[in-house]
Amino acid sequence: MVSVPPDKLPEATALPQPGRRNFFYQFLQLCGPYWNCAHKWKVRSFTVLLGLLTLGQVGLAVWTSYWNRALFDALEQRSLSLFLAELGTFFVIFVLTMAVTAVHLHVKRWLQLDWRQWLTARILDHWMYKGQHYHLLYMQGEHDNPDGRISEDIRIVTESTIALGHTLFYSLLILFSFIDILLAVSGAASVPGTDVTIHGYMVVMAFLYAGVGAALGLLLGRPLIRATNTLQTAEANFRFGLARARENSESIALMQGERVERKLSARLFSGIAANWNRQTRAYTWIVAYSAGYGALLPVFPIIIAAPQYIAGLMSLGVLMQAAQAFQKLTSALSWPVDNLGEIARCRASADRVLSLYEDLLALEANAAKPDPYRIEMGESPRLSLVLQDLTIANPDGQILLENFSAEIQRGERVLISGDPAVAISLFKVVAGLWPWGSGSVLLPHDHPVVFLPQRPFLPRGTLQSVLSYPAPPDAYDLRTMHYALECAGLAWLAPRLGETDDWTHVLPPREQQRLGFARLFLQQPCWVFIEEATDAFDAKGEEHIMEMLYRELPNATVITISVHTAMERHHHRKIVLNRLCEQKYLFNAAPLCWLSDRPQSVEDSNGFIGPATLRRRKTD
Image (cartoon, rainbow, N blue to C red):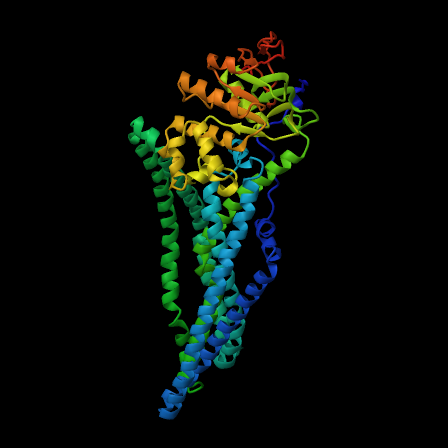
């Protein structure tokens, strides 16, 4: 292994993080491509239609303002004919408002769902790319509970962004539309004690009223954004804890761990309670202020316009139109205050989605560039699995295996035993899940390696889909599936192939492992790497399943990790990987300190392979 000077060692084992940029720029980088996706013309058409419908809503609001003026003028004149005419006009406005609102809701909800579907697919493509969902577990950063960020936070971001975008556009249109109305009806007013006359004084008062209100509202609402962010994190942690308890309910019940789980759930919920109270305090100031602000809004314009009405400078209809226009204008100007809570919720969720997305991009960027502290995966030019100068380390740099080289030919059966941590890390390295270390792994180019973990993954669904996983359920005919189950000792499950259940809880560990072998019999792979997949078997059952494996896959290469000595008779050779007391780090900010220079060899039944060491950094 290449020696690295201490001052050249990386300061942390975490993967590099991209530089923090402007939030809005990052958000556009993530979500902007939606309007240029495969079905972009439909998306753009619905977006334009949403804007046109919003224009229709504003047009109806302006029409309603003039209708309101005409109605009160008719009442002031006590004219029945004018009153009935205005009722007819109102009926038209009423019908159009219902139609526009209904179509607008449909278009908006289609965009919200379609954008959510697109963004979810984009994040999932990165999360499920080459084991990144697994590598993320060992990476520093703000990406806890990625499932909650994908399912819940993306929903909040897409729904709230479109809703907020619509209300903001609507408010801007209302702002410019009702400024003209208010300028036309409010007239001019003199400043008391001066010769100064202000034309359209109600517009000035509306801006002052809304400006003071928005400034105070934003000042009082600043703690709400932080409180909402921390509350959503606490909620996600609580959901994750409950989901973990559900997934491991059998083990918890057998160990009588309910009391511990209740305490853990209570502790997680106490985090929710603390942040909820913090958010409540933040909301209290906003709600109290908003209540007073809203209560004064209908009265304030009438108070400031009343002198002109009393002086006979405006009719009752003009007074009511001025009051309504003032309310519309100030409501539009108060958009930031009115939507502060929703903005805080949307921003918090957007930050959670962006942090997950950035960390996934960091993983991809790290995998794409040369790194002396990453194991390189390649393709062998021969029909063999080649390990060249392989050094395996933990994510913190602690070395598990050093300078290990081996070649496994097509058709060989190799048993790997010794220290389980070292052997299992080798299993993950060959599978491409464990990049920490150095050296290279060259996989056979003729056929992919099929990996059989200790506990096979059994997705919820029909037994047929579980057996054929990851292929589709109809990839194999029923007769072949029946035969695979029979070979694995699960013939009694054949009648249940069409049943849907949670098979992880239905089947005991031994039957789950048998189902893993049934998949091998079904897939007929040429290369198989098995990780302690018979530890739930008794000696007779293990003997039978291995004999069946070699009968059904006579030409396959089989690499088995097991500590059972009885497995030796089923393999051509054996490699023993032993852990050492000497310890060192592959990379760390502290200097490398050698506690021992005496290497220990990897034992191979065919001869010497190479040194395997496990060393730790010396501590003060």
